[in-house]
Image (cartoon, rainbow, N blue to C red; front, side, top):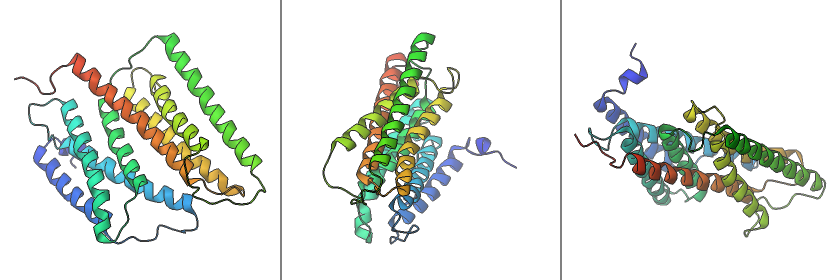
Length: 271
């Protein structure tokens, strides 16, 4: 049996897999919409729909990387950067063109796809942390833990205070303080978690993966808890959380590119 790592060492095989996968992904995203479970349970539909988007675009980004589209002389970072750029552009094009097949354009789908594509880039290119001094790392971990606990306490207080007050609209209009706070918390937390090296100094990729998963699942978990109260689902708050996560990840991606350029100036090997 051929191991996956051995299989994808062949550029031609990787590109064939990319072509087939890309065709299937584009076809699936442009088919007429179908029901994803009970439509009255918005958080359930959100979780299924966005999970499919994340998985689909993460697979695309990985295959773009394995296909070595930056050229045979390019280092692995250049392949990851090419996957990031091509995948990001396609995520926008894919969502825009869905309106011509009877589907609607969803900004939350674009956010989910971008999180997957940038996440793959960050995991593939995770360098050693900028600051490895134990005292600084401890500070990052303490601050991260305090913010996480504070966010959970605030969410619990909001749930309890709203108990029995009726069910408001699931999609309130306008940008309120709740959305701003959730955006900032998600963005700051992903930066702090990555800096705190949750998997240790020697496993930056695992640490990056864990940080993204923890913050990414935080929003849906909080909203799922609201199902047990009469407060209702705050989809705007959930979107703000995911957008904050995306913004923090984008900042990390820019930092990774700047750091690479400063330490390994050319993006292609001069052979």
